[in-house]
Image (cartoon, protein in one colour):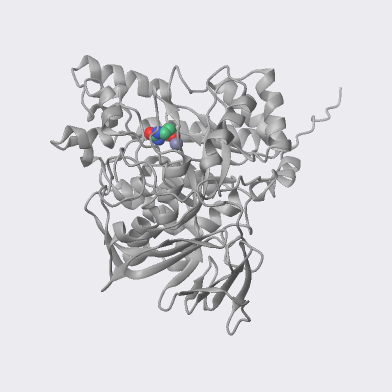
Length: 510
Ligand code: URP
Ligand code: ZN
Ligand code: ZN
């Protein structure tokens, strides 16, 4: 697939109910247990889980013998159609969610990113319009990119009336999205009052800016300047600042795309000290190192420019270990794609290369291969870090993140033994580059069920998937907005810890 390919999507009646569907013969894998059961989906939800189920006439049957029936992936971090760095991400809600579904991901949480000065409510409405083409369910984090009484007021409206339960804060991108400490403090305080989770892109924007200037002054204009200008200390400092700010205010904090051991150590310290905080790991950061920036092929090197950057060898394994140990909680992709033409805007100045890479389609396979097949975690933990933890933290559980009666029928049927080779020539997103080009992975989403509808069927012969031959039958516009209430799991202990922290004046004798 390339930037030129526009649509594989059906334009069928999105309101037509899916026929009942039975996934039979597989092993159901949840975060807490694995068991042999069939799964019956009716009207978009899971109607029954068990053996010898009564099924309605006309039920479509998927044979999952030898396969793992797990909750569809939840990608907590995507940027479909993001206007960013003087261009717009090429994969929009239609093509981004197409890739998601082919790869076994059935829900995304994207980001509304208002321009500084813009009404955050107006930005939310704009993103909703763009997301009307989504083919799987989606939620929104809303970025706070400036501060005013209006922002404070609109945060209240978003949480109370629009189902927003998390806000995003950029400590990077000086002169654009970056928040200063005062705005960060104000937003954290307001979010706590509303019961919304604060998420943070933790890189020190001032240090990054100075690093970029240093590189350019030294004549380093190529993509290698990107990782060199924003080394791990930029991320460790900002991670610590974000977490300490949350600790001081006593509000939960979620650090997005933790990319290096130094920042993860900061998270581990905070968790060990009892702070309610979470870390997200990107499939890319966990499986690719910074050697990609130093290759001869400049076009490819530019395609890897994203923030935080891919890190020196050793860091990807540290991220995997953090997920295995429970220091990191979720996995995502930060899918934010730009074609070669767009990346070339920074051909002579790496600071102008639009930041972002693909991943939405390949996260489940790449992580299954790296984590389960290579023995870092078991399949239950895989489910925890690819869907359940995200659903709990972002208050979508048990609608998402579990195979159980009453949950949405969003299911990834994984073939744990099949292999596929990842390539731009066969992927289903639009961008003309794939960061895992040529990588063979074991663990193939054989079927994806979304809202009870079979939307992806891989073609697997002799244990090898022909990815291009798979049948995609998603429906443009069928994705629903996931309204998320506030005061979810992260806030459970806050009233108690607030109370414990209360101070009283010391009564002294005059
Ligand atoms: O490089 C990235 N990650 N682009 C998307 C915006 C962000 O920082 O998350
Ligand atoms: Zn970011
Ligand atoms: Zn991002």
